[in-house]
Length: 307
Image (cartoon, rainbow, N blue to C red; front, side, top):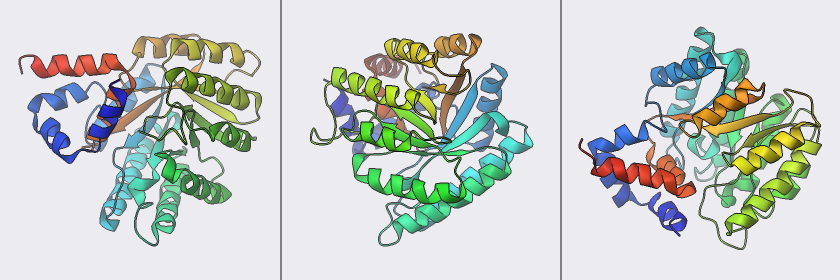
């Protein structure tokens, strides 16, 4: 019942101002976002890799309507990638990029700007010995994002894709992308979508996830299974028995189920932790709260506790 209101609040400027102005908020968000700087992101990456985990880093920001801001996001990613390489971390750490953060939503030439900027990040990642995954956003950007992915993969075939099981189209997209060398992260989705394009019922989303998962696991690509759901983890484990070890990976969010991350890594699975950083953490936090009621309880308890 809380999911849709929270997703609406994620785009409310008034509520954003209220939450971000509370000193306690940044203390709470540190559970999910390790910091705002490149140094904080690198430190968190070092700790995770030292624990036997892999990392995907996301410089937070989206819906950019200013070219200078898009360019600043590109600079943030290239600085991060060079720092990861300098610290010997890039082998086990990639970056995740929202195309709307690098210019996709700009008027007129947005797709070209986003593609050009994604190429800069992908080249820097390749130079550092790692890769890029293009994050997926709300359904209005899906065709554009997949189109940019196709163009980018012509020069950087290692670029990862993201698909969201709650969209009705996704099973077909999984079939299209389950080819050799294709890296695909499958997640449930965390945007407020209309019933016409997305499943609204949790059980329908879960069933769609399993159908999509089976397509990817039976394909020739590299599935990246993004879930914290114990049932979906168990299904993935079972499906994975038919694949070679290391031919797929689990992905989980920073601060969510760390003991399960450690357990899976200890049994020899590849586990990648999605680590967001930067000062634009509000929208990200609200979507995390919408996904899991326990996250909201944690947040509210912190707000009423002594600062």
